[in-house]
Image (cartoon, rainbow, N blue to C red):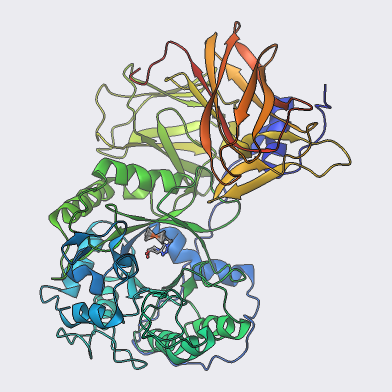
Length: 618
Ligand code: H79
């Protein structure tokens, strides 16, 4: 048997290993964001410092914290994808183009001259910046980021670098960015630009246009100096205070090109940037696109951007609007992990949003009116993902407010916060303020709740506890549905001395146990089984070689698995591995152990146990 006592090599499992050894190992809660406020810049024109140096001067952690304080408080922003593509809503020559509509020029391999004809039709006469920003504000959004230029190259402002812009090229003739900048400033919404700095399907030297042979082939350096740099400089000097500069789709460029773009952000000393300029430019925060990470990135600020429907840019056929319930729960989920939510809407060619989007924003706004306190300025809490919903936190002097976002209202009137060890000072419903009684139970804290939830989507209970939350680390256990998902980044990876270590890697932002070359290396999760029975075991994994063999055990019961190639290491498939009978409840060790001789390296994303007899409808 391999040596079980070796320390794993990454912190999350180290913490878990400790907690598993000392059952009551207590983790100290929540990293509280500094609540310092930033200086507001109210002058429309800020003096322009000349960008010179190629290196960003190192900023003190305090200065960074004060610059980003408003953003940490804000939590919720509006993303807007709007451009030439919005005119036709994803339809080209009577055909429906697949995927997100702002990509239509590339998807349809539309020649530049032809795409320009759509720009000639861009005339969103129904656009009203004040109304538009007012809607974002009513939805509870605190910042707005809009496509100043997407990959198609069309500037939604009065670009001085090219006539291919909304003022000079389209009949509309109005500088949309300046109208929005002004409306945002008036209404107290932070304003930001999305700018695609490397791709440009219209201008020579921009990345991405391989289909139009009329475009001159010049270097990306030339593109950056001719177009991207002057446009970014203009955006950062002529539109008042800019809260965020949101780069997109990094491409390998020369160091000089990167530095010339990066140094421009000094024109607005308080501007925040995302992590998408290039590999070596982490910016102020990390971004996730479309998907919410299962676990928060460690010690970083981060944001999830997501379209309200399927496409970023307006697409006629896209009726895939997320429900208000999903959107509110996404916001709570993201906040419970410490992130921000940048929710995208897609104005049409006339300059307004579809009623489906407006309706959802208004409904979110109603929820925020009552429950905003549980979102704004909150941090992650140690109460990660309870059965009933999510939890956000806010430190208030000697106590901490825990906001219990209850998605699944308890039928028996008893809501349990498992593992919570603090003294409770008070509990109340945010909606209406009804005081709730609480008691300490073996499992943690029990809150007695009324029969009906105040909100069908997310009812928030404010639980004030003394001090900083202390939560007993609890072993993962199957949920009500009988399913227990064990993820790579929760596993203890046991490596053998002297060989290359198996460890945590990621594909598409999803962690897996990788570099598993050594058949002596194995992985383990500690779990608790409350209901004995037969468990179906499956794994989300990839194998490149013809097949691999391994064992999965739960204490003394085990199965042998033989899994054929999934095609490549990057191709993940869920494989049923068989069943394991667990005859007694209690703490268990789940292990995945290579079969010596028949082992081929695999990447393991997750192992799932599901109790038989449980159906999805349960
Ligand atoms: O602006 C939105 C996207 O257009 C942009 N980022 C967000 C915020 C983005 N550009 N590229 N990507 C995201 C990733 C690449 C996606 C692609 Fe595809 C897959 C390009 C081609 C295949 C999706 C599917 C877009 C076109 C077809």
